Length: 278
Image 1 (tube, rainbow, N blue to C red):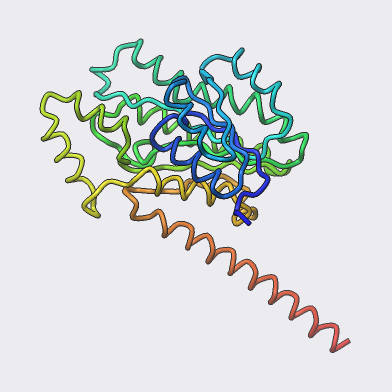
Image 2 (cartoon, helix red, strand yellow):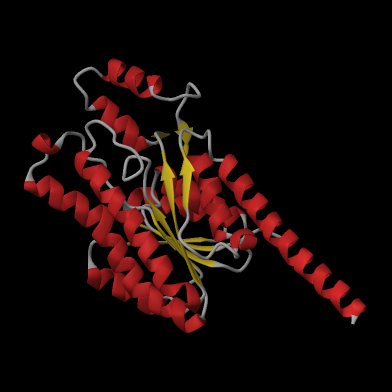
């Protein structure tokens, strides 16, 4: 028995990096995974994994999303992972850079949620997990102006959806990683004037001496997609800063769940004692 047996999960940016690792992790836990991306060649590599079916999808195109929605009768978990990291300050960010980043990092999530949320409401259950970042409203990071702005917006979107639809049985959370070693990161490093120094600078910021892996972040997605956190229905930002808090946050949640259970048992015990006195 897997932790996600029978769940239908749709996720974006599945061709590589965190999206790919998450799709594989979902499938290994028994989920029926619909993995999407614009990179058809890389996406097809996932077809070797049982439980994964692939669809080419541009999450910035409303019509493509709506066509896909017609094929999906039930959806248990929606994972919005697609995004782009722009390098530079506000002075390095032209209007087209701003529009591109906000379109892919924020508007795409708006389109996906707006399309698939009604299905979840009809089912009276659903789980939305958005990809944000430590570089957001959480922390100011140099040379990440529009990226941080877009990821702060994702946190706001997540909290809003969670607050609006909690009573309809919808959970909405976001994952906020630090620096993760992915093909995208390696491309950005190679694009720098001095790649070796850029890599050293990235590593110097990691308190544990290394970057997080895509697989570590995928574990957190599995946790949030599972029934282990069904009592956490409000917005929750899970932090995976270079892997160091990846384990800590689930432990904190389990502790909170244990305290909630203890409170219920205490109330029940007091009720029983009161009944005995009567």
